Image (cartoon, rainbow over all chains, first blue to last red):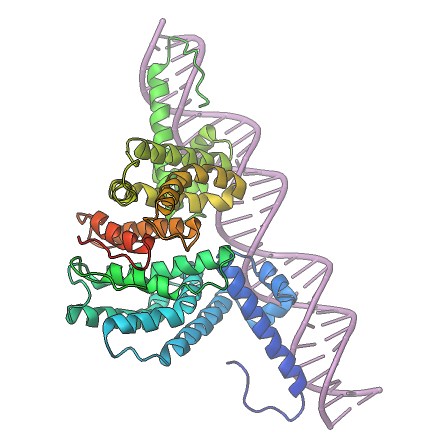
Length: 204
Length: 204
DNA sequence: GATAACTTGAACACGACTGTACGAGTTTTC
DNA sequence: GAAAACTCGTACAGTCGTGTTCAAGTTATC
């Protein structure tokens, strides 16, 4: 980002060190902020294994750091979504989306929650909407095709969907369910949540 | 709580005023803490319409205030649950529980989240477990009877259940769905979440 | 060995919040 | 009118987090 493109032939190694530190800081900040949105800069620096002043060398203010964490998380989420084909049957698309990216969504949500107090809510909403739009489009298409229930606003269904993904991931972290794949379970529950009252929920 | 039982025949009205203030403080604190777990005492006092010093007159420390809020919320939740008959068919009991108390659960969760940082986590867990046990017992009974799926730990199912209630209430607050009763919707979704993969979900 | 990039601790100013002390005011009951 | 209970503003000390400055390191490249 702030790395100048003209590298004066000399200090490649030093530069590499610095970039490693930046990565370590971003990793630590992501973990810390998810755990507690009000972590101090000192704690983040300690968790990253660098000095507090070093951290300030890379990020002028706390807001800068949070913004960088947010940007990286969003790009991760976008990358995860970009490879998916969500064009076919809404239920199948829902399954694809959920099974492949519920972990990403959880991380995304955690960082967003931490950042929403730090930066302006509008700043967050802009970033959030990009991700939300993908889920929202799927839900709306399903509603238009009559596959998903239309008696509730799409925003509600999206909220339920994201919240359930979040709950699954949170419990995975907490318990010893690391190996368990929450995908099928989530799909079953979400299909019930999104399809109209009269319809039956497929097995699995 | 700290009100002495020997009322010296005199200052009933003053006492009543004070108790009204305490109620106002607790109400304001509940609202404020749910909105932002890090509200300052000054902000809470302002929202309650009393001076900061008055608030300190009733609650020695911040922890005292949070503890009082927590205690009141828990007693509310217990009162809401006490009237329910959850003995029959687990699915019917689930419906009863959800339709009648999802709002309470949401409030309970919000306050708990705010308090968990303030007081020790053990202190919270003690209080939390009382509520959780009621939901957990229902889930475990359902699992024992084979009505709820047994291939996932009960804690997971409880988490999903509470999280979904939370999502419903949050969206109700945010949107213009005040009049909408999320009960039937929640029941349908939760039955799908709790029953075994092979079973079909009842209509509604 | 000189240089340049990077790291780091100590120290500081600043602001926000907590909790306390003092002193003055209000309202009700007697 | 006096006393008791309660309210409340000002002011202060202590703590904690932020962001900056300075001065002294380390490490790799030349």
